[in-house]
Figure (spheres, rainbow, N blue to C red):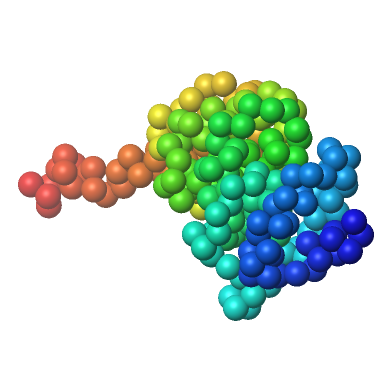
Length: 204
């Protein structure tokens, strides 16, 4: 089992993709404890074991079957940029379990898909709220809102601000920023108003 774990952790996604059928069988056959330990190793090692920058070492999700939830989730942890959104849409969009790791992934990718236009903001908001009710606040959520200028539709940020205790702080901050930005755009400069209303004699 240690050799299998080392292989899974160290090999690039294109190598894992070529062994998809066999690796999927191995992962699905793991006990819950073995699977949990493997996932913890992935998340602990983090960035150092993710898909490398070299595109030749990665593979496209469309080239794989991705029939196994565990195999797909594992690839999404290794290479979230390539596999995060497609794996979420296939397996986790309707996930109703309570496993914390899965919920963190679901919450993070719901935001990513909404930002990318792959998921309605209303559905993403429901997912974020549902996961947050289970005391889940994925670090990926905060990263996306702190490091990206996210445009949130007015009806969505209004809903967030009206019931902010149901949502993560970073989402509330993003909603407030969007509301402020919209308000600023609605304010006309004094000079424009003065000219339109002919405040001064030379404008008449």
